[in-house]
Length: 299
Image (cartoon, rainbow, N blue to C red; front, side, top):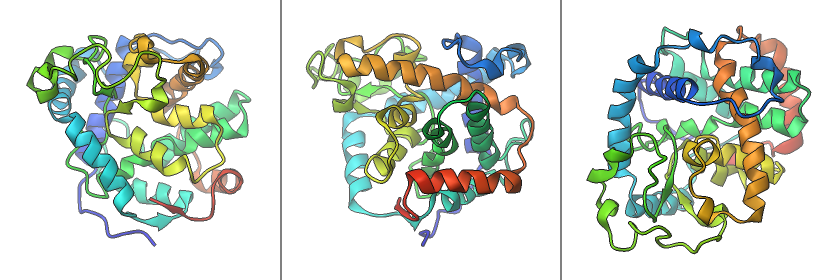
């Protein structure tokens, strides 16, 4: 059964999340030429980059100051120490949808519609079922906001490695100056607490909806490594777009990187697609869910 949720408005989280996506769309490049669905889209129709920047910069200042090694260790201990809810994937999608009762009027797009749009764009391009269902569930980690996160800063936003020097490839890198790890004699070094070539599976990424969902699903699904990587790293822009942290990568990460880059356009650009008929699509995706997930999962 779902656990009691914290009474919170989804409007601010949704607006912040949309503004973060807008900045990533407008400042970024499109890597994967194989994603056919977005070739005709006018990227200029998304909200103006500068208009999103003030809100996003204030968000990142708070995130960058609070995402410390100490906090991230505590977040992972907290994750392992309790089950927030027990429910199936579609039920989780419906719970996430409650965030959007007061959603951003600029998009009028519910969370469940964004998930279906992402999955449908992947499906139209003829990608495999595991990638379709990955698109369907990739943002379910935002349930953290309902389960009692400390704020927005530990739910959404670009992710980065904690425990080593903050990369200058992270958005607004100067805002890390208020983070106590910024001048730590160990954490501020190039490798920090890690070894070169250790592999990204062995580093600690800033806690948020990506990392949370990855930990939920890695032992409760039959998704391949590429699907789990798409979930864990889809907000890891300093790595998959800017090329940071290569010194921590191993050979497996090179292949994983290709998968994450292939997924990213479906996440960013599908938000401008037409509305999905949820009830019409529900049987197909419930069938996919049954192939890759148990009836109920511990959240």
